[in-house]
Length: 58
Length: 382
Image (cartoon, rainbow over all chains, first blue to last red):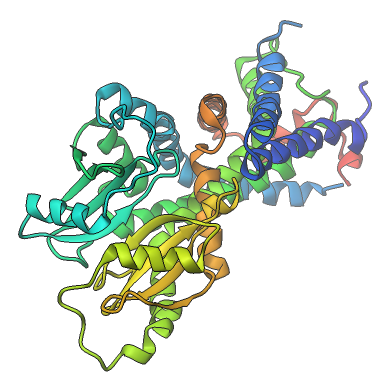
């Protein structure tokens, strides 16, 4: 029987994605140039994560 | 750890808030998708203007001449606003309407800010993009339509929050991103719903909440007009409204002297809801990425052209102004718009998979579903 995951195991990725998304949403608001680039990379993270896990074959 | 009965409560919240708002959220996500690129689409369709190439010059046309030229084009109408665009420093835009206070514009002109030449008249209320915009903003139902969509947005926020609460118990035996493809189509879509939902959560929450704030634009500005603006113009209350306002160029020059580090966003003409019966109001913007989204109103006497007062906008208007870029995704260039569109498509998948899961299992109780979780044990839930 599979054992239950701990809270950290369950929430590590969601919290990380949430923080990265928040950073991305804020970066472009505070600075042009560098801030825009940071926002592109940071907000691409949830998209790439969703597609990576969503389409991979296990 | 959530008890079984609290999971059930959160599940009911998730189910009902989602069920009520999903159809409207699908409409908003679908119409919002082309709206992300409305500037690009307008440009591609030719509904835009580029200032002609001229030798570099610091010369600026007189605003009063531009106003006269606009009035000559529509002699029966009134100028409501002069609008500037920080991305197009060589253009002035003039909005006209049947009268200065009318809610709907009758014309929106572009003028060359260097020569004062008339350049272009934007088409109003026509085209596919206008249909998208109206469906997105008010479903052709005016303020009540907008407020209704705001209510649906609140339900979305509740649905997202309850979804996060449920994510924990549903993922207790599954590694992040695990998608059970082999067992049943329903389980596969449940896992995809959880994955896409948690990945896009913060973006969806921010776009949803800022969308709700945007639906309150009319009451928010109404509050400012009847509160702060009425207060600023109070000493003039007993005086008659001006029929023919004085020089708008003089008014702008005066506004610039009290806000030297700022540039003009727009000027509202006397008699408009954003000005006073006897005053222009120049709304000045900062020059940093963040402060360029904010506005500072400068009240100018329409007859003397002198500055009467300037005060910062209250927090609730500032919240509205900040929520606009965060809803539109137009503050980080084309790459950000593309990412915005991808996140929007993923959100459509979250809404669609949620609807599918409900259709598929609407006759099965949450108890049966909890029992079906991998190796779920009563004691684990307690």
